[in-house]
Image (cartoon, rainbow, N blue to C red; front, side, top):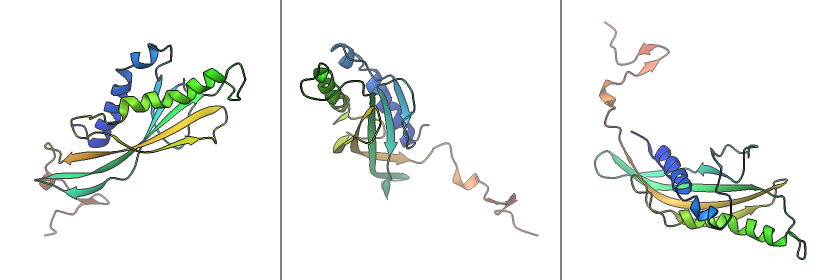
Length: 172
């Protein structure tokens, strides 16, 4: 059984990887690397996608199910080797780099992942201008998630331990 974050993480990556032709048919590179965002952008091959999840506020639903809204931020990272000034020879390449993140967004916005999460609704977009020689765009989405109790986990059989002492045992 995969938990909600694992499912969303894997399904987002699969969605982008499965649609590589959406980029390559236009002569663009499909995203090469996918990462859990840890506050920095590593030196991997680019373009790269970093996924970041926000806090899920949960409410009880039927049975042992909880539902909530999950904020997901998709960081689209590419090298910036083109000049963005009007009139420069690479200006058209620069504009294509500006359009690239919106192609990623087109694959994700309103896409319904299915199993445990609903359609991704775009709630914000932020270009990050503070990265040396990198072009970074952050798209933030919100999706409804459903979290079910693990059917293989019987909470009544779990031992509660404190420093190796089983708290369920009664002293004679």
